[in-house]
Length: 375
Image 1 (spheres, rainbow, N blue to C red):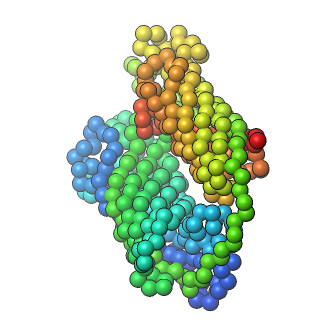
Image 2 (image 1 turned 120 degrees about the vertical axis):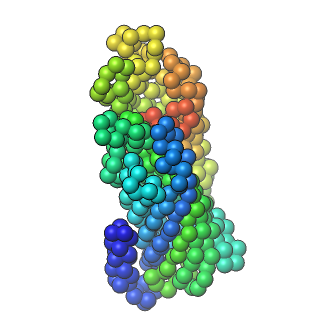
Image 3 (image 1 turned 135 degrees about the vertical axis):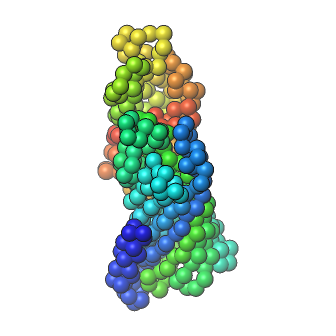
């Protein structure tokens, strides 16, 4: 309850700081507040918590957002999206006396992309990315049956399909369906992550009178190609057999992509991957870990990808496979999901999660990327 009271208090403070006539100009942002209730089920893999997860979960979400009006050309390219930040709280186990996974509290940024509008109904996709904190994690002595969360601080990810119903000029009702994910990317083990599917129901209130959106004829765009170089590092935790304490291992990712940008927002990519994973020494059962060579810890792969540009941020998703690997521990295919922040015309900061065996976290990539334009 304390979380709910604090959240309502913060939103009330934000509400009192705006007046109806403060932003009459469409060149100014249009702020709003939104409250959402979540309810759904788990799809986390777990060996010990099936009974706890059978009851489902509930959550609360509070947002301070801004309806873009087209004052920048990227907002028009992206159909006037909504952006902002929010707070998320989830009660993961209904019986609080039985909880072994804690109740995460997340702070995130969100990006809401319109799809279509039909009368009073508006359809959109909603992406949230941030950090979550949970007070209760795996402990080999005091909490050994928590096999889904091993670190207090985790990455938070959410994705929903939304339908908004306009009730008045300022007030909307929202119905959504989607997923949330809490994960540390195998920085600490055991790491299966907390994954939920569910419905959300909420209300959105505009803090100022909505204004007519700006529209300008977009400049002519010529499709172009880029060569993209990326280098990243990470660490993972694994526990060798017959050893009480886990070891930490070093990881590296290097990629080279050709990206074809067919409009200002979207690009498709084709690339090559080189990976090094120190924990592979534990996955080659026929060879003692100390005898595994650096070459045997390397992987070569290839991938197809999609990138979407939102102002200075590029969201990305890759789907790839290996053509050189020395163990089947990684499975046949992998994915990469994350983003890049543009620092200069060519230099980017890169953060992404690389997976194994489908959607299982392999490691978090922290790196840089360099985009070289070609004709």
